[in-house]
Length: 355
Image: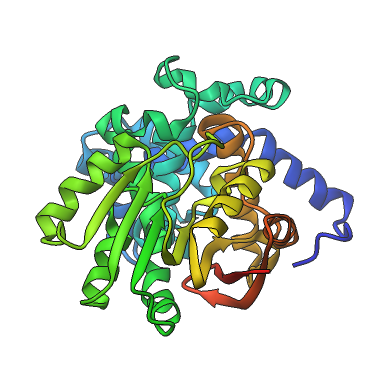
């Protein structure tokens, strides 16, 4: 990844500028091509492809509607056109079949798109002004999550779980090699990770620390999974510095959690987590840092998703550069005992101990 210089020629730079200028149109066009079945139908046509008339007839759409979308798809690199017949590209394949791309697009459409009109307000006011498209009674998306429309919830959790689910199988052995007897799952969300831990280690006792609404959702899942005897809940507002963690944790786990807070809030949360540790306990931080990605596309995605936090989530957090998180860890009186990159698609695991 090269963020230190600009090597584009003027023509290339102008082309990139037009991609940005028409970005909202490009996104909605790709979404329509996917959701109306146009890309899938053309893909099935293989190397022979289909004409505009064939696509329109098969899908019950007007030739005009099909034409404008398919011509837009040429500029997006989703289709090729030869002798009046359209064929699908490799990029179209990923739009249709890649779980990561599908999760990202659905999240952008259902959770972020309408609210992004208020991004400038969010930046200037330091508040998630885009969240008001779902109602003005909440200060953060985390308070709202249990009450958002079903489709929005589905896309939010699909996005969140896609990245964490891939990382968990690699992270669990790293966590349990130290044999924690008591584990706090901070920001446990739906209880998915705690359930995985209970399945992985038949002896570990777990406690989920999260907002009351989130714990209620998790409690139902835990009961259905049959682990209510080993996974308890501790409803807590982690933004309230007077709310201390319970004591006696051998491990405090935070997965894709601290990116939901400002640096000041991160230091506060980590300081309280430190107080909760047993003598040999450790805090585990599993996060994605844009500066530690192997591929430019991954860094790009993380840099852009930061604006979801600015505009929808809470107005003051982001996907951090690792050096900023490390500084917060040190300010909280912790040091990094283990630093492991390359977990799952894009995660880094910090195992932190008290100084």
